[in-house]
Image (cartoon, rainbow, N blue to C red; front, side, top):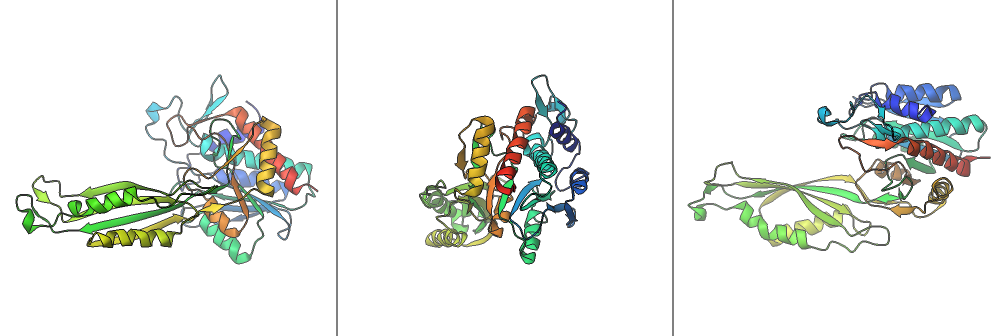
Length: 379
């Protein structure tokens, strides 16, 4: 494959950019955009590299592409068909490499689509922008969230945002993410009294104490969802108690559980209801919370219409709007008040051994992005 977008995707995969180390990825992107007249601003914080770039006037209607150049570790490289940071295309046109799907192909498609659009429309209406980070797969603390804060302070105009995450399910374009559930994690310590298992009357077992409360937490129907979101779910992620000795009643029980919640609830409502359950069961406990992101939603409108029409033109597929899955940097970008969607390649192999993407899908995705630019920003 000699298509420019495949060449760029392979070059990005070859950079071992394990989060938050960008290596040379963003510099490659800068070298592509700067000659086209893009304004380039590097916002580097700690070990994280962030790129803010745009073409057009800041006061004009703005379509922003957002993505990340960092990847998760490859795992046991001996299990890969090909070395994970030596991008390889097999005889069926499948490109293998860490980041192939999540999301270096998406980044390459954005860049190539913008290149083509600006070359064809040097005096286009509106503004084409990029927000690229190297801190999405790890802490996500110095990346998109910080650049969004900067854009908010400047009162930058952002009307539309396409996050190039791998959103497709079975075929390219069969699904667009137009929102995400909120994510709230509880870190609970149930306090008891350590003692000998043979003398339970001299101890207070926190595992036994917590069991009825856990059952109530697990069986509670938190909401029924709505037309855009499935019902809220609660799942225990980690639970630990005891000293490792078979004859010791533990003094504390540590439990971590996560809520993926719909727009029917707020994080404050969830916290309050959990506290009520814990207090109802007369537990002695310590509790801290981590809010990873609030739910956000982009209803059907200009951006979803442009995307679904572009996909239909180029793939013949009828696209489904979905809010399933985990969190993404879209949760931060939505705070700018713009329309946000996630549109990218198939997500079947992300974070897996032998992560891969169909080369033709990358080429088609580039055409879809270009089509959306034409629909929303052409004169």
